[in-house]
Amino acid sequence: MNIFKLSIKNIFNKPLSSSISLALLVLGVGIISLLLQLNTLIKDQMDNNLRGIDMVVGAKGSPLQLILSSVYHIDSPTGNISLAEAETISNNRMVGSSIKILYGDNYKGFRIVGAEKKFIELYKGVIKEGKDWDNPYEVLVGSKVYEKLKINLGDELISSHGLRETGQSHDEGTFKVVGLLKPSNSVIDQLIITSPQSVWDIHETHDHDEHENENEHEHEHDNREITAMLIKFKSPMNIIQFPRQINENTNLQAAVPSYEISRLFKLFGFGIETLSYLAYLIIIVSGFSLFINLFNSMRERKYEMALIRTLGASRFQLSTMIIFESLVLTISGFILGLLFSRFGVMFVSSLMEESINYNLKSFKILNEEYWLLGLSILIGIVSSLIPAIQVYKMNISKILADA
Amino acid sequence: MHLLAGLLKSNSGSIKLFDKELNQMSSYQLDSFRKNNIGIVFQRPHFVNSLTVKENLQLAQYIANKNDNNRIESILKNLNIFEKSNKKTNQLSQGEKQRVSIALAIVNSPKLILADEPTSSLDDNNCSKVIKLLKKQATDFGAQLIVITHDSRLKKHFKKSIEL
Image (spheres, each protein chain N blue to C red):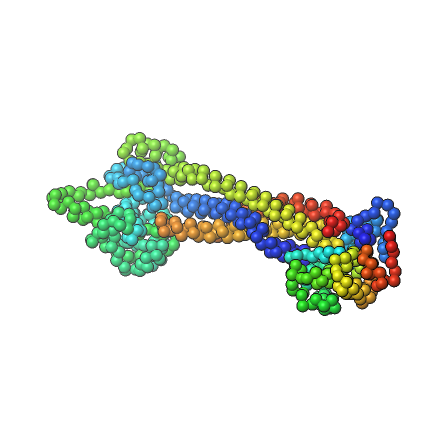
């Protein structure tokens, strides 16, 4: 038996009143930590997919939508642009490198992207099994796609039109899996990648079928379209001037991902801020509840305290016991709060994986969370200070005489 | 009695106990003096409610920097409440509580046992049991016993008495 053991026994002796303060603290710490974790994870994920892309060129529309669709592959594209126009831009002297990408089809909800081979290099994709595509209709499959759909090398995938599962299926659109990619923790994990030619071919025959009755057979190479082009500049200076030039002088749209993403973060950053103020408020309320809790239990336990003093315990030992009781609660509240947030992250990431094929998993403790630990300890000490001082100043003789 | 136990300091005069001047001690020294020399039995028994009988006694030992489960066992057996060792103190009967409080007072082998109205809420039968127990414990462990009481039933048990 010692003072610390006694503190813990005291907490468990009144589980109900202790658990309210604990629950509040867990909630407060949990929400803040969850917000921090999600914010960091999403930012990391976003930045990870952003590297090497200074500008995206696509059809006119919302710039954010253009970025979301062609960099993160989570929104519908704004439309198509003509290959010829895209070529003009990629030949501009300010452009360092450019990657053309095309959409059109999906396989069971996973997008099939027609792209130049540079696209895979951009995300540092490495082939785990099989080989690169050589011919049209040969595809490389990202790690999450083959894990989820149990696709093996040599399988044939029948695609459907559009970006969602419900699209009309092409009987002709049969792709052959020639390679599987290693997990790269970037967007290519959830893509099926093929040559641009495959996508052109499949839609030419497709359009051909549709227009057969009208006798329209004019699909020349010049009419070929792409969905977007990812561009890296020769010099970072061009990021200011070049997008504006395109937006003003052509009927294409140029969007800067880093700018659009920071705009997006500002938009939901407001919500995060409000929510975290609320969570801090909850933590403060938990501190009050802890204080009231301790204060009341001091009253109930005054004879107990007096007894411990008559047994020879010093004032200091008793005060330590009170503070320790409070700290045990706040520190376990902090730990439970972190657990809560980790389950929250797992839950959100499983939700996100369902809807947009994103996967966020990380269990590292953020710097801000150490601050949160500091805050929990502070709350523990502050809320137990008055009860501890009361116990310190307690007049044992008077209490015992009242009995 | 509180003065004697070092729970209260006197405003004037001096209190000398075991060659120590209590009035000149600091609060901390008094605590330490108390845990080494004095056991107190209260009129109404007090315990740490979150602990069992045995844990209460262990706490008392811990405070006095002792740790001796054999002694706890022998005291509880001696007082005939050994089978209640693992019961919470609020599950005990009044008589059992009084005995546990005696156990608490003597667990650290004090030189002086102070009993404050130990029998006032007890019937004749229990009264004589408790006082006999106190005297027996005092003799068994070589302690001096001071009982403060207005209970005339106790008169016959003691040779020395100071009436105020």
